Image (cartoon, rainbow, N blue to C red; front, side, top):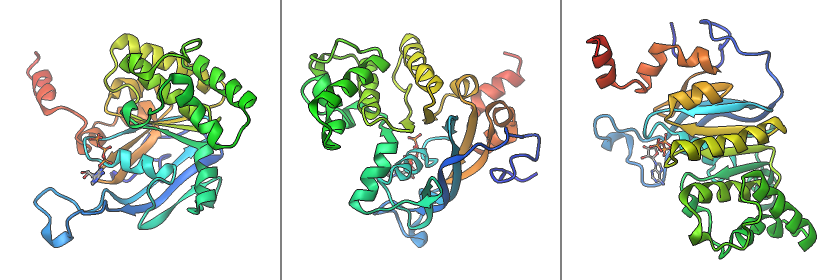
Length: 282
Ligand SMILES: Nc1ncnc2c1ncn2[C@@H]1O[C@H](COP(=O)(O)OP(=O)(O)OP(=O)(O)O)[C@@H](O)[C@H]1O
């Protein structure tokens, strides 16, 4: 049984719903970060390419979890989805068309595909919450009335309504994560791409975040997120894609992928320690 099941997800018991329209697609992406060692200089277990023939389709309205161990290539793939990184080969398509990497093309893509970094401090920079969230709309040259409307709606969508005047440094980590999402929402994107959105949040913070993401999803938002949390992927995602060493090992309905012990083991997503304990009946 092959692990490369992404394209034949209907086989091996990993049937997916009939495909909806694909919004965003990575096709055969290869990417090596600048400074990556040449193939001849690789240490054992090291690899030159962060993405090595990575393909993944994102369908409208889906909640897609990207699972993979440290260094699997999740963040690198997400950075390709909004054009921050450009593949050495392969292509990213938005609505079936190859991404246009001109300044104008990227601005148009990023309005539709909004990326939220794992660390909100990589994203937030203005003095107050409202100033930060208004950056995107003002950059789109929207007038102050529309900008204000969008800022208020974005803050309300993440439970920060009425807090616009707060200096960013007065927000908790959970609030800062939600503030970063508000900044993305102010662009009115079709796809929200979140790099490890629950990392560093306590259970209450995760619930709050997911409540807001639920509401956004119910209103039609497509959500792609990376995570190490198998429980989150099982209970919140519709689809799961498993990345390992820059390749998608499996992509399908969340429960089907997560029930596939071989895929999880191949991707290093099952702790040897806890498996051993379980086998010992502890
Ligand atoms: N800014 C960077 N510069 C150089 N190499 C990088 C950079 N970011 C990632 N890499 C390398 O690219 C590969 C994939 O990393 P990436 O961060 O995409 O994985 P990930 O699945 O998101 O990992 P994690 O779960 O640890 O965040 C790794 O080998 C990593 O060392």
